[in-house]
Amino acid sequence: MYEASDIINRAEQFVKEQLQHDSSGHDWWHAYRVKQAAATIAEREGADLQTCILAALLHDVADPKLNPSKEEGLRKVENWLEVEGVPAEAKDHILEIIATMSYSGGNRPPMQTLEGRVVQDADRLDAIGAIGIGRAFAYGGSRGRLMYDPGVSVREFQSEEEYRSHQGTTIHHFDEKLLKLKDLMNTESGRELAEERHQFMLEFLDRFHKEWEGK
Ligand code: ADP
Ligand code: NI
Image 1 (cartoon, rainbow, N blue to C red):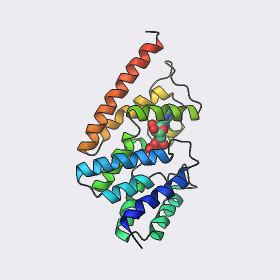
Image 2: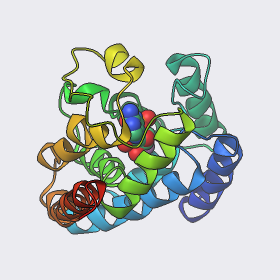
Image 3: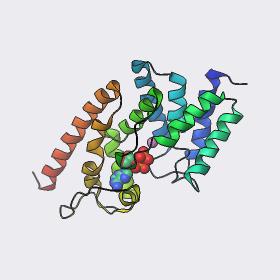
Image 4: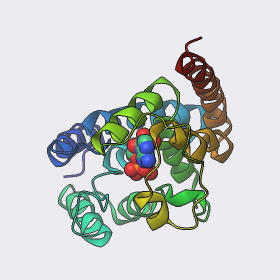
């Protein structure tokens, strides 16, 4: 039976099981933080809370990095929603959000629904600010990347593949992606939250470059 209050608890269990072996920055606590931010933004924007929370929790379960393919990942989420008895309309909406929200160089078509815009904003917020800085260095370290190399130049990317495969440093990742996110926010509430986190990254980078030169 579809029972709205329990399904969020069960979604949390499912996501914990699915993401427990991840080390690419898509661990359970990323899903948790995106859910928290999605709830904050959804309330302020008047979006459907349950759709936003479920999509936020489930958004990385279908990630192609954790599945044989994106399609198989999406089928896994769809199957879970069906077993849970989520009505077809809500199920399709959640799947549509998950299928379309990833960054991909920032050149995807805009999200179709308010709930989609809310969850995408929440996911982007987790890539910036203090958490975003922490995640970037954790990710860079996991790929054996240098923190910084003043001899490397900042790149623009034409495709997802190019973005994923290039060998920049973590500090370069700020110019290549993280500092662009605030202008890509969809909602007013998302923009407000992003602004403060953005300023914090600028302050961090300023200090980083000063300390790099022993100042
Ligand atoms: P998403 O799947 O949410 O679009 P990614 O898989 O691109 O995110 O990144 C997951 C986390 O790792 C993010 O916090 C992101 O900023 C960070 N990250 C991704 N690529 C790099 C990189 N080249 N250098 C440092 N951090 C990165
Ligand atoms: Ni995410």
